[in-house]
Length: 254
Image (cartoon, rainbow, N blue to C red; front, top):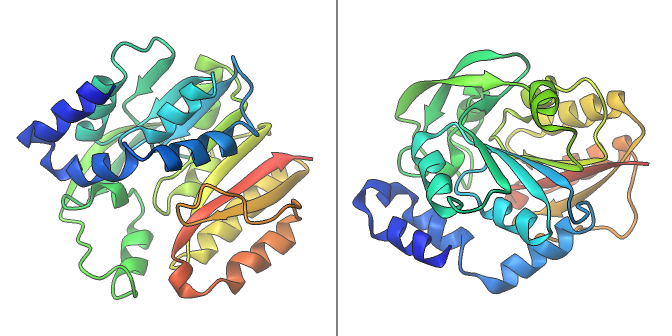
């Protein structure tokens, strides 16, 4: 894996991904924290969905936990990077598509200088415009990509033990394509779009009796010892300072 990542960093074709490859690979402490977190949800031999894989660091953690992975990534360069990094791993299935409420196509808004915040949500781009901490972000081109749904992925690959969703403001749309509860899942939130987090909590709560927790930023650590209700989690997100910026809400069936 290391040689594949080094080759990608040296390839001018992947210049826009170099920062992501530096940030998300090569930090043993971060990897260990991720593994500790995901082992709470993933049994050895289990199945994980990685919705919005970017350059695939979560894939690596899920595989170290002993789980098979179905990874979705619609950005062509990111998908090519994942293919190169995990080319020899039969436990990883890459689907080059977005995930949404129904199958078809959608327009992906590309941030060429910072592909990690590429999005399918115009509302996310609007919320970032002028917001503190989001200065200088520019979505400078568009591409059309295929869309599948969580229900379709389950039909094709089986029901995952854990599903991670990180799609820059499109999380509620992804969850709208799920019609039955999963054992555990996570979805990203941002303080520029707390309304999206609240919608996600509502959608998940309608699917089953979930309890919630949160990991702030890139801490890879649950903030509370006790899992809480949907209402309490919504209040927690509403009460965060703007500077908290982002994190992941975790949900598991009670």
